[in-house]
Picture (spheres, rainbow, N blue to C red):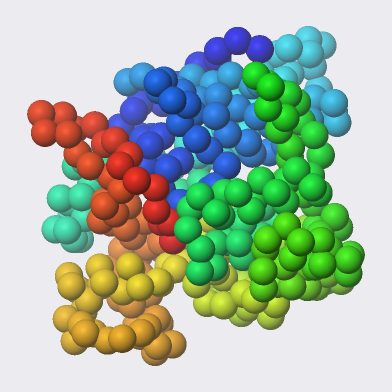
Length: 332
């Protein structure tokens, strides 16, 4: 498949801030190009953009072989519509982000300043299984090692999608592939450490509770109820639960609070919290509630813009409003 176009102005979607901001760990900017290569929805993608459109190319996909397209007399048209729909859902392109940026800017001067350069930062709509197990890998970890662990999960337990330029790409494994008892020992051999137990035990719990249907039930719950259910899983604390609520369960008011988010809050909004050595449960709730009151029902999305704007890995070129990556760091 060659390049296809999806109408989307660059001010509504910024690929660098969105794909390189720590939401997902399976995207990389190909050296010497403006093209991103990544995997989601059992598909290997290439993305690039200009001022008026998001251009995409499908390198390989399991969706076609599994017949997950829509009914059509022409297979090519079917596949094109399917992939276009997946991209629109993934980037939440039904959301007019410019309107929200305007609303958030009117409520907060700091957001107004950040939004001028960090425009088009979108909250990805990820698949809950990949999102959850990726963020178990993220605990006390750095981006390159998280990405390595995620790829190990895919290589050893996922399904082969395709080979491209001497690299074989795999889908993210399903819950049933990660739930057998022997998986814990296998993951320890692969260097997952204590996370091996969290991954296997959580997968077994999810299987017991209904598999992927369980995630769909969480989407139908209220945010706090869904978060409480997630925290019943092995190794899932408040921050990871909030990441999953925000990034894959459509609870956009969820706000993951780590030490970096604490610093933003303490320095700019809640000065009485300055100088604390750690984020207590009470502080965690206070910070989240403050931003929910400030920004409203999409507070998690709004704060993600502030978070990425504050990261040292992004630099703004003098004489340009283009944001370029400096050094990758976790954005959650």
